Image (cartoon, rainbow, N blue to C red):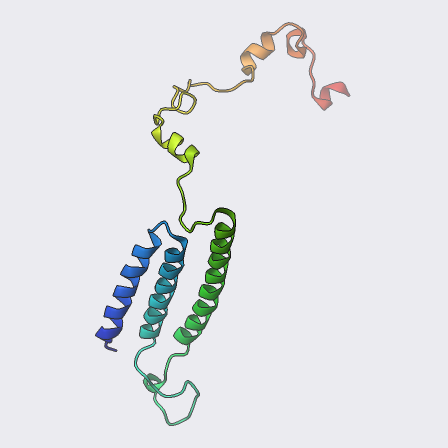
Length: 162
């Protein structure tokens, strides 16, 4: 099976333009970038199916390599449904953003800028951890503690109570 170079060039340019548009701050350009990425993915899936063959129905006298593979076509249909739902969701986000703030661009959050300007040292996370971090008393010290049953010679096992 040979690959169609035209499909590969179109697919590569769609991926490049789609990724470029995804990195923009405008939500409309993000939706266009997602549409380009999904179309490039559909072309990729189409090219994996190979060249045009016979219908994918079984007939007794046809060799197996002459059939067309229906699986990439099913993947393309699934990709179309997923891209439609993501596009509808993004259009809802764009509409809501326009209604609330009358702008299409995503702004920097003040809290994000404050966190980015802080030092990466965190006193709690970067502190030295002692070897023994348990809060419980070790068994050796528990036996010697006044009032313990072992210090008085009594046992807590059920066999000793009987």
